[in-house]
Image (tube, rainbow, N blue to C red; front, top):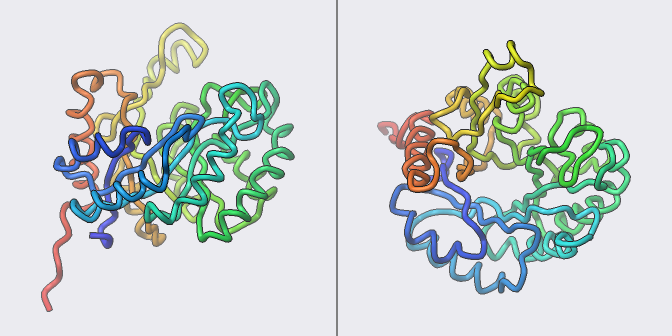
Length: 295
């Protein structure tokens, strides 16, 4: 199955062992367990053991393991985020993955430029720790409501910021957890961006967006009316066949994992309806099921 680019979904780390058996039969081929700000008191060794047993039974892979918080400040609810990054890096091999992902963090209320020195300090060390264990670090490209000038969570949401980040920490095992949605909310065209940055893309999240260009042209991006919506793949504006083509043309070896729980229509009782549609849509975009050639 690994020669056909697996399609999967995100699951909350704390209940992944309970949730995966309920949804794997829908056809998900990979899972990305995620934690919010901290891994807490989760026994990662036991969690990995149980997930690997499920993976062997159902033929899926753990594509990445993630913690989303601000590791640069160590303040408040983010007090354990940096230590959680370290734990996930140390335990990644037990899950059968070599990718740990999350936000970069940033200096709260300060600009991306001002956050780069702290980023270099923290992730210079984390990248070395990861390299020693054969792990790659991938940064989610979500702005979390931040801008270039200020924000609370993440600096890795703009290609100019990526240049600064990768110049500050110029290592081969540091890259992106990319999705088109987070660029489209800034009115960036994701296709030429992916073509330029594909060799730094370690993991892909399956999330799309719909842009209401009529609203943009009439009211701009600071008016009352929403001008963009996060979407499950299959309901948004992106050509996923192009995305998969670019990934394959450049030897991408990872997965595409759907990031659900954002679609304004396929939500609540329709959440899994939307996700399974997205799963089947992405499988269609990759060319359907693998068919061996004649000998």
